[in-house]
Length: 293
Image 1 (cartoon, rainbow, N blue to C red):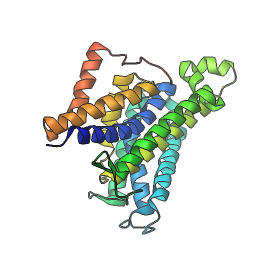
Image 2 (cartoon, rainbow, N blue to C red):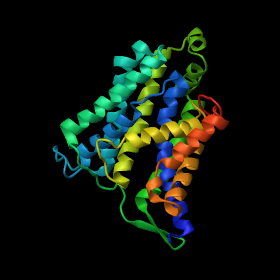
Image 3 (cartoon, rainbow, N blue to C red):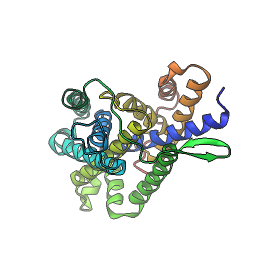
């Protein structure tokens, strides 16, 4: 039987990763009111870009440092996300149903394009950005798990500071409250939406690379994180960054405990159960619909 301390450490590690996944998803909803169902595909894009840059088995055979792969995956996913906004979203952003369907179709297309032109149906991997393990109170913890936790907390803090302290961040907050009101004070809502899509894509790219480092990557790897992100933001409150972080840890701990002590085949099941419960009991989520906090 795995010790409780190991279970808690595993839960913290996976919850930190879930938080990175969910923040990008909720940023777009908080500002534009869009449930971006291509978010999972952006996770795949980030992972595959990292593999091309730093994966030893990639067709480019660049074999660069995994840190370069992480940055490359982040930038690639951000650029694809920005292109998606400029090429598609901005033309139909006032038609939520059409936009939801389009992001779903585009995400499906991107993932299958990765399968056809890059990795096929097999797995791919990249080297760990930090290897080995650290002894914490007599428990061996993988350094990659520590890295994910530290990076996740850093990104959460930086996002909070960016939104609350910078001019662009405050503009994001204003647009999330009312794009017409923001326009009255001279804020270009479309420019702010583009910035938000770039940020969300960057978060997705980082998450994809870290998922691949912790496990392995596949062309379908973005599907389950998309479902988890949707569950997390519903639980935390659509549009709330604080809610996304709290929701990520609730679902991460619940899923880890469920798979460890009940049945490992139930991975993902607990998230769906929590989603159903909150939709029935508290549909606005823990923190309601906020733009950012």
